[in-house]
Amino acid sequence: MRLRKRRRNQVSGWRAIRRCVVFFTAVCVIPVLLVLLVATDHYMRPVQHTTFLRPQFDESDRILSDSMQYSHNLTMVGMRMEKRRRHLKKSCHNLGLDRNGNDTLHRPNPWEFLVDKKHHLVWCNVFKAASTSWMYNFNILAGYKPKFLKKSKLVPMTLARQKYPRPSLQGLKEAFNNSVSFVIVRHPLERLLSAYRDKLQFALPHTHHQKLGNEIVAKYRNKLRNKEHRGKPQQRWPTFPEFVEYLVDSVKSGERLDMHWTPITEFCTPCMFDFQMIAHTETLQEDQTYLIKKAKLEHLIEPQWKNAGKGTTSGQITKYYSQLTRSQILHLYHIYRYDFELFNYSLSGFLELGQQDKDPSTLLAAITLKDFQRLPLPQVYK
Image (cartoon, rainbow, N blue to C red; front, side):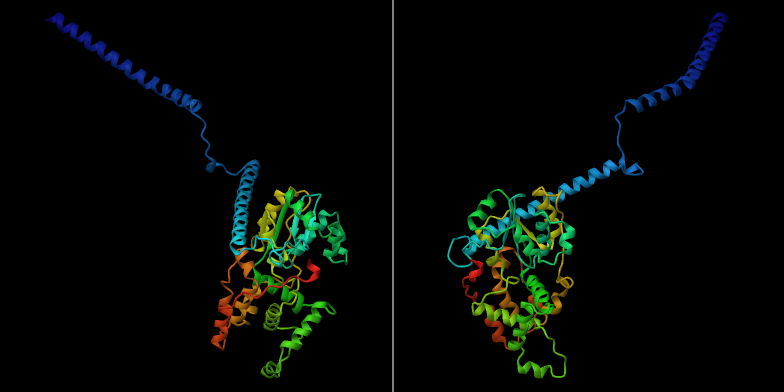
């Protein structure tokens, strides 16, 4: 019995000693193993970039981001250009304007085109639609220096025609085959207002347009209106309603229209040519950038916005069109109907500005009005 007790005591002692050894081993070794595991895991784990914790972007990152945004913008503009191109072709076909004929709408008109053979660029110069800006660019491409253009007293068009003579129809068609071709358009009624303000309201002394303004005043500022405005100072230039009456009567009688307010459809005959790009003044900055990039002319020219007028026209729309009646605005729509349809513009925002017609039948007649008869262009345009 005593021997068994002694052996039990010895076993119990060894167990206690082993427990102490295990305990101290765990206390000393396990932390070391944990440290090693953490360290090993840190170096073996794939590196994870957490850019949101970085204090700032590197310059290379910013340049890459800007480049990606620039490419995205160009892609979007390109899609917009193609959409406009498809709309133009579809509208030309639906209106029957893509068929050859002898009238001004169905006969190609190369008169207002500028062809840069060296840089493979073709442009139809629409007056009052960024024409000043792109006349400047074409003069730069022609070799004129910016300082010379700034000091020269010659009209930019005169300088340009010395380098870009008016093309023949055959020459123009050949240029379209190997060039970047474009036209810049503008909302018809905004373009019309810009032309009125620039050429009639602020006409330079002793010019053709000042003489034309005097003729409009003499014909359309009748005695009745003089009685209504008795005691009020009368402006020397025609009012906007007087100019619109003159324009409507001119179209009805088949008279020649001034190049600054001739409809683009007759001026450039866009249904007779296959324009690659149709820029709008409403998106001109992006459209110009895209155009210059596609033409590979970034090293020579840059987007321009040269406004030779008296302030922005868009900010004057309410002031001037609220002077017209709704029937007058509808008459203007009929004059520029093809421009509205080919370039996807709307009369919305303009018709609402017009005054109510005193005689409802006048408005009804304007609503049901058929398009004015189109007569051949003057000899100078042929």
